[in-house]
Length: 219
Image (cartoon, rainbow, N blue to C red; front, side):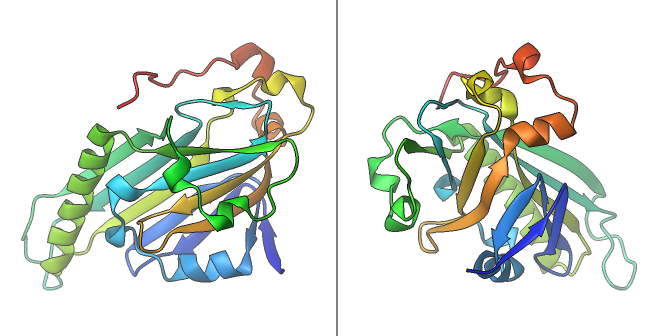
């Protein structure tokens, strides 16, 4: 299989005015790049979003190990320069939470290539965050339907301090799968992120900060 490799920043146009941004050292399959080029965040179903992490079985993937960020900005003007909606410039961050009962969410693509001593952890948005994201997407659709130019971003990143027991490793590769709705199912989003190498690149001392700050209250 062919892969495109890029370090630090990966940027794709999802629509004319929405972008998908990914920061990390990564390897992304060509098939995923094509899917992402066709992807629009406006089509997501927040309650059905899932992120699956595949890594060493020793690692304790915790709430907040994956963060989803979104941003919306608009002057509220239509193509004729008329004020149609209020100006907005908002940023949102969602910490994805571990599913305690994830058997129903495990699909063949997640098991394909699963190696000995690896395990899967599936995460989702809390009910509250799913509602907030749904409201954000509804607002973006409202502006777009009025022919108002709106700029947006959607990004996914890992929070290294929420990978428990990471101090036992000198390198740790992680695969990330993304599902934006049940109909489309999972796709291999990023392959072989070395999150320890990423932390070193960012001058993060994992032994000093290896304490997850995410809310652990679940849904």
